[in-house]
Image (cartoon, rainbow, N blue to C red; front, side, top):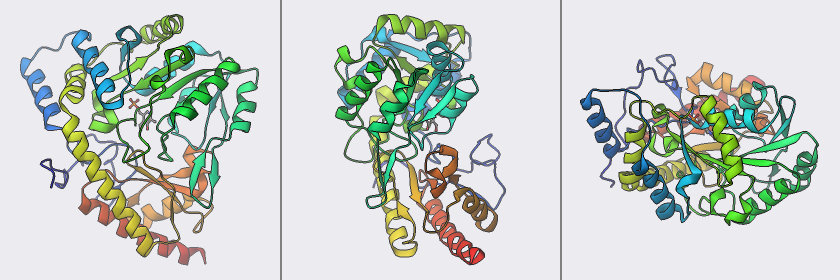
Length: 393
Ligand SMILES: Cc1ncc(COP(=O)(O)O)c(C=O)c1O
């Protein structure tokens, strides 16, 4: 038994939670935050800061950056030089800023779909084009791989200037190996494309193969690399708005940072620094316990699908607490299925089509919740899938 509490149900309704802004009978298992309280060490740090009572302008100091550097070294065997590292207020704001700074209106930004939907907004809302390179889906193994031939064709397009990588990959729950990352960087370099690697899920990997940061590659290979990460997914602190952008190449870094500063993304809020420092310096034991809990939850879903819903296929690999379920035996239109589930059972899932690629045959379910909620969700899923089949007959 873990000394941390992953079983109590916290009433998040009426707490400004985006996830829990749902009707009384509904159970949200969609957006990527967790229904667990964060690490007690983080709560203590935040309380101390609030008690101080003054909330003027802040800036990160060396201790802040040292905490991040030490975390990456110990946990991921990655060396980050302090001058490469900068504070930003969120992964997506930083990503959008990088898109504006490193590409022009009308350029192509390549993404491997299905992928985190907000990437499309960062690209399209800034007047750039999304150029999809769909991942190859193997219907025997239910796993995805990069389609290298297609990817090279997209990168070779004259207007392709950036590739946004999701590492580990949301929603298909996949870590990328060092070999793959190295091949990807070299291919991008050959075609004059910069890689922006979103590594927000790096600390939530539930087994081997482990997360490999782009920063684990030799520094000579990192001239066209920008890496963005944050403690927000692993420690459930999205509302802290604390993230890091790491750019090893000096001239690329100066260009990126001019954008970040112009976009005013380098200014922490009142608890961002204390909260993330506590995560990196004192949160490791809690994170290990969380991962055990998530492994347990994931296993429960596997057993449940095997016993009660064999028509759904488990398509996630080992990363993230978001499971990617192949519903192609039930529907070709997951958005329709998700609407049916919500209407008839109150279960709120993410429809796979928002992630583009072959997402219309998938749903995404967030399993980062106490066991009781997970069982409730699975029962609703089972009921909804059965009635959906009847409705469609
Ligand atoms: C891949 C990915 N990147 C970024 C984010 C959000 O990052 P932030 O809240 O720091 O903007 C999420 C949230 O789900 C995500 O899954």
